[in-house]
Image 1 (cartoon, helix red, strand yellow):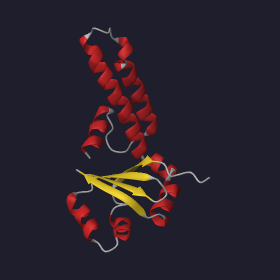
Image 2: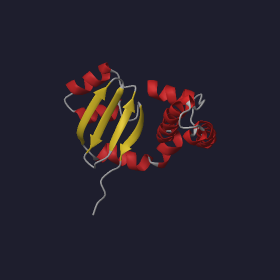
Image 3: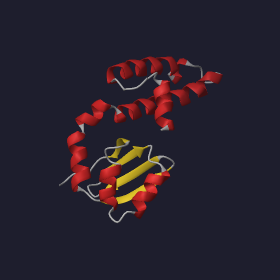
Length: 149
């Protein structure tokens, strides 16, 4: 959640992410902080390099969690969470990463230790995740499904 709030603050996003507004803000920030605008020995050159990388990462991150992106990929997401099993998962801080049998991976944000412990102790982890995680927490796809040959 901290990462989401950090990126929203960087792009001045209040609540919902509007992709058109986000793109305009992204372009403005990239122009302002592009490393080529600064001399190599300028103190701001190093800061601009870091800032531009943060802007690019933030843009891609916010696009991946936007409602428009989720709606565009909803059919694929529903197929994954209903038809595939879990191959691996990891919980770090408030981020819960799940890998599915189709090769895709998703990150869920805001999953606290209590929810994670309940998942670990459940007799059917996939069923628990379907009921309590998949459509409850903010998520984004981190790895595409394996392509069938």
